[in-house]
Amino acid sequence: QVQLQESGPGLVKPSETLSLTCSISGGSIRGYFWSWIRQPPGKGLEWIGYISNGDSTNYNPSLKSRVTISVDTSKSQFSLKLSSVTAADTAVYFCARCHDFWSTSSWFDPWGQGTLVIVSS
Amino acid sequence: SSELTQDPAVSVALGQTVRITCQGDSLRSYYASWYQQKSGQAPVLVFYGENTRPSGIPDRFSGSSSGDTASLTITGAQAEDEADYYCNSRDRSGKHPVFGTGTKVSVL
Image 1 (cartoon, chains in turn purple, cyan):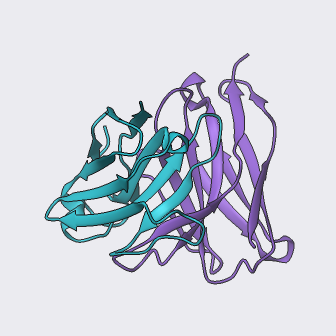
Image 2 (cartoon, chains in turn purple, yellow; image 1 turned 180 degrees about the vertical axis):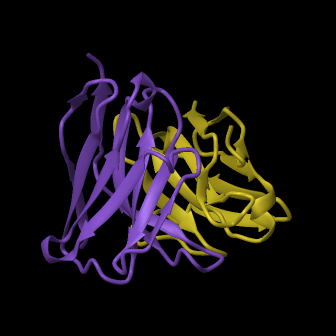
């Protein structure tokens, strides 16, 4: 059973770069689209972007200028970098596996437990 | 603002049926997936595609779609079904996933 685990700093200063890593265990990294999704406190879910094991990326247009997602197949990890952060980037960040993105039916499963990142000086 | 619209909150009596709807143009072309999120926890997939319920999800959860609206129905709601529910599909371009605004379900 595939499990995902987010890791990274819980506090980032404004204007700096947020960096998180998602470690994949119990399954192959190949053949899926690995996503980051965030949720500001008390608000809804926002898709940030994905990377496939072929290094193809797709980002939320509203975040595209600040987001980089990369993958390390040898470590079964993928990472998120979000630059020039502000308080509006404070959120719980989830990693998740996306299935069948290029079909008419796609879905996210499983999800990591999430990690809270606070942007504050 | 999200391109998938959900009612902010619905309530249902214990054992009764509740339907949660998700409206958006992309739903005419793409199926929705549905997620249950309990307080302080990660979302859990409860239904996706035309008619697929993941292993371990009770059969009281079902989904349907018509035109620009997708629905998740809980038949015989239980206390443990009290949670936020989010739909997911695509934006108008079809190129990017987008989540619905979320519906808080209260079981009375």
